[in-house]
Amino acid sequence: MATFSPSGFLRIGESDLEYRMIGPAPDQAPTLVMLHEGLGCAALWGDFPDRLQAATGLGVFVYSRAGYGASSPVTLPRPLDYMHREALDVLPKLLDQIGFRRGLLVGHSDGASIAAIYAGGVQDHRLRGLALIAPHFVVEDVSVASIAEIKTAYETTELKQKLARWHKDVDNAFYGWNGAWLDPKFRAWDISDYLAYIRVPIAIVQGESDQYGTTRQIEIAREECYCPVEVTLLKDAGHSPHREAAGPTLNAIAEFVSAVLTDTEARGRAA
Image 1 (cartoon, one colour):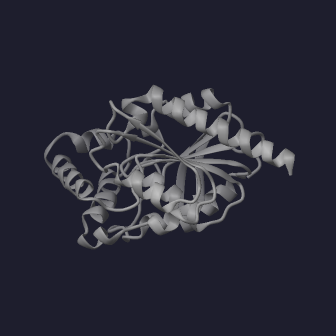
Image 2: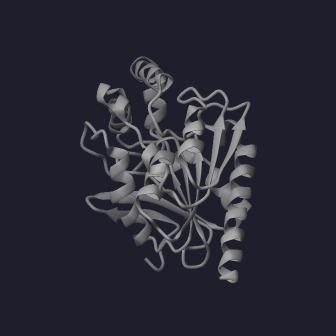
């Protein structure tokens, strides 16, 4: 799409996906496409996309996947390969529809996993790098334990009411994610094979107190990737460094984006 409103909905397949476009459009500057966490949506990024746009001067595109925010709901239960479907079916269509020309994917948790599957599974020459916040490449015991705990909290505390402020169908959002991760067959979920096929630099930002994953995820990236992997481990953060340590997270991603785009431009001039 050549021109579009700063916010609205995109029709992708059978779903209407809400979005925000901050800063220059994809035909005017490189674009950072942000992929939210398993209980996130466009609005739950807070002001982080705006701050990222201000820090980089690039366009920032934020959207809610189907089942989240104001986007169309999904049929439950979600298939256990739902992240593969997002990465290999939905995301390519979305990038084409917004006129993505050059830029990076910035993903958090589930969104980071989707970004990694996309980069390894779709050899997209437009993609210059990945910024992954608290990514999952395999399922760990700590992930399952924390996801079981949050199910209890959702059903017994005010968590459901809090999340309902952000999702028009809060049960669809919550159980779509929680049900898949707690399915015993999901323990076999493993996307590490995709990492060997990623041909762009990766930055990983993770909190030392991440309750959903350990530094084993970082070790897997370093073991499997042939591309550069830059790691920022933040002492005072858990699973959401962009909220719990917003300044250091913003700086790490902005510096990575600048370095990656400067490097690719320099190589393009030298070719």
